[in-house]
Length: 388
Image (cartoon, rainbow, N blue to C red; front, side):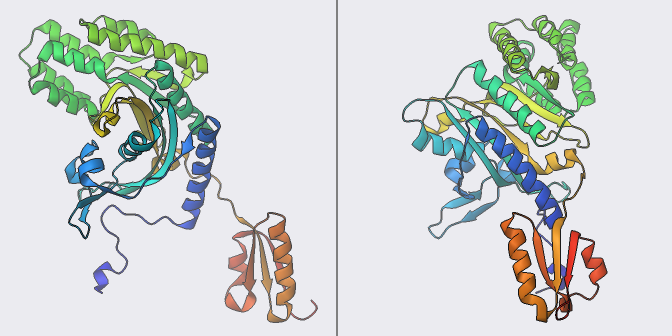
């Protein structure tokens, strides 16, 4: 093996050391317990999926898919996200009775990165999918559950920005038609490049009124008051329907009592092509990107089911970053022993384990610097020498 690769990892892959893994486990467990309390059942899907089903149906671009061939020559992909695999399972096995289905998941997903990207190619998502319920109450429940889950994980300062895919879509359709000019504006909005968006709008061959309407879109961020402002710049019925859904959603959010964490942002767009309605993103301190996102989608139609769904996914790594360092729990007890007192040490450790306490056994001859080693533990017991 070349020394160049002895300690290297593939591009975008990361090691998770014990301390961080323990924090991740605690956060994941608290969120999972909250999801279960709300009636969501956990599901697992394969890491490998067929490209022609999950790979092609996913909104993740081909350039970001990890592909390989099986022995029969079929193209497989490492799952790039969890919504599409769950849609496959739900369409095949869970929607036969035409009832709402609440599912949850916690899994690693894989997206190939460019060398200059610096982003992880493997990361964990924890989230839910509320399937086969068309009501705005469904969207409201998912947002309320997201907020409850984040608070349970220990995050206090965060914001859920809520928009609607239909609003910007209809505004662009009215003013720009179906040409490629709208595609460029969507890209600027997705990248949060508002300077580029403004410059692009000013360069368009449009009336000053239409330019102002497009620029007004960037100002539609805030509380309930921006809903009325949005009505002032949209003209067709489909655009107004998007606003009516936002108005109804706000009532649901207030009934849940989570409105302090919710703001509206009508400029939100997504690169996920299967979203059809309400969209939302989660922002928190210490992180420059959304730590989670979700919305209403129609992906199940690609698997033969006429059903819609709403869901969210939280990036566990970004959530941990938002939570900050925090206090690291130490193992409660370390028992140093010499050979002649080994049995006694084992009995003490057994007693502590039965009481549900952490305890580590350590042969004193296996540690060169016991004083440095003991700093890892809250308590230390030395059983050294016969009868001591």
